[in-house]
Amino acid sequence: MRYIAPAPQTDIERRPDPSIMSDTPEKPAITVKPPTPENVGAELSVAVNYLTRFSLPFKSETKLGLIRRSMVWFPLIGAAIGLFGALLDWLTTMMRMPGIITGSAAVIGMLFVTRALHEEEFANLVDAYSKTLEKNKPSVGWLKEERSVRYGTIGIIILITMKIAAIASLADNTLVFQTLIVAASWSRAMMVLAAAWLRPIEGDPVADHFQQPPALRVVLALCIGIGISYSALGEDSATILTAGTLAGLIVALIGANHLRGYSGSLLGALQQIVEITILGIVLAIQ
Image 1: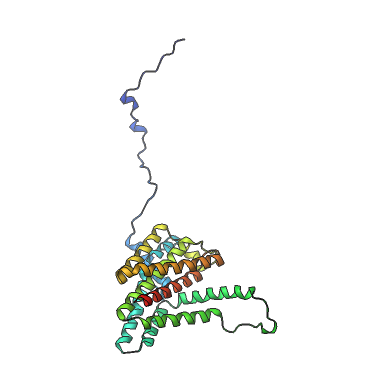
Image 2 (image 1 turned 180 degrees about the vertical axis):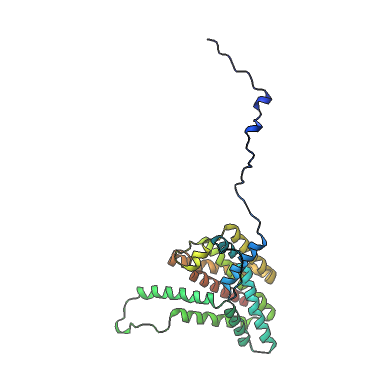
């Protein structure tokens, strides 16, 4: 039996039939929606409400996605907090107050605006570590007694004293403005990075709400922090931000090893350590 080859298809036959083609365009693999003014306003409100004592209303429903995205504005809110503290330092300096008073005014002002949120979280984390250390410590018989003062209280007293001393030792008001803005901004940018890197601990109020921010928002938060720092301190910002970042990573690693994730206490302690590190580095290189 002879084999008969099929007739070659013409160009017309090879063309797809328009009638069977779908009118629905293919969806791109990644979609990026541009932020609307309403969304940006809602995100800013969430960030302000969490980081400060102010309560800004917003129309949008508080969804987890909105809360996660709001972390992009943490460095900006932090810069505003640092600016407020620097203004109080400047006002008391104009009143010819000594450095210990001007530094105290700046720290107390920032404590008031933030309702001492991160300081409290720092104390909580120190208490958590102290309990672990006490459990591993062998009993000393009659010397073993209940503590009346917690380690967290002692730790926060030392930290606040160091902040006041560092601010009081800065050369002039201009440097105080620059340093407080950078320290408050970059320390909160590190909070965003830690929240994206570490696993949120289930049951912690902060971790349950913020979860892990989107990668694009983390990059934007870091860019905002770097931009603010470079605008304030110029070329020195590279050294200062590197030191602050290393301090934040150390806190994150230690906390992750102890907590197996991140909590509000870890983020607050990280913010405080990064802030005091930046103050110390600026003081050393001024």
